Length: 136
Image 1 (cartoon, rainbow, N blue to C red):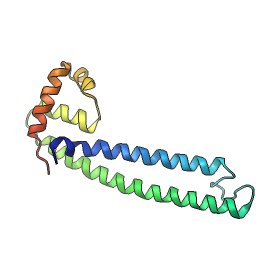
Image 2 (image 1 turned 45 degrees about the vertical axis):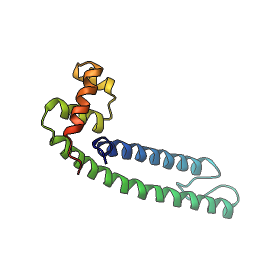
Image 3 (image 1 turned 30 degrees about the vertical axis):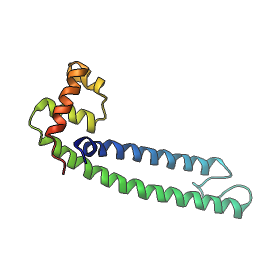
Image 4 (image 1 turned 90 degrees about the vertical axis):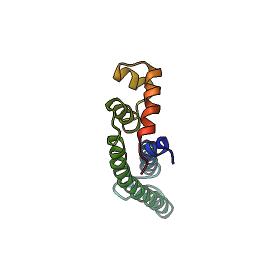
């Protein structure tokens, strides 16, 4: 695994969690707007068919919640690992670039503005910083 792939794990997992949360919200909306409410547990219309659909949706919501919780635990662990790897980089500018890029999710353009440097210089420094990272 390259340093870039290693450091990218955090943002990739964060994006995956966001996607799962959106899916959970979509399912919740589906359950509450079509044929009844999962909040009070009393679906409208044909009791048996709607109740079975609601149960499947609720089961899926619970499954997604479990997955999200596990991913969040992993996200916290990865963030800790990546912070340790970034802290192992000696140069202050390199550490700042890596933190802004891989923890905060900034683009190189945003980093250039934040650090008041030109885009090309940030790209050069980023390459140097990646060479300093020890992949664990």
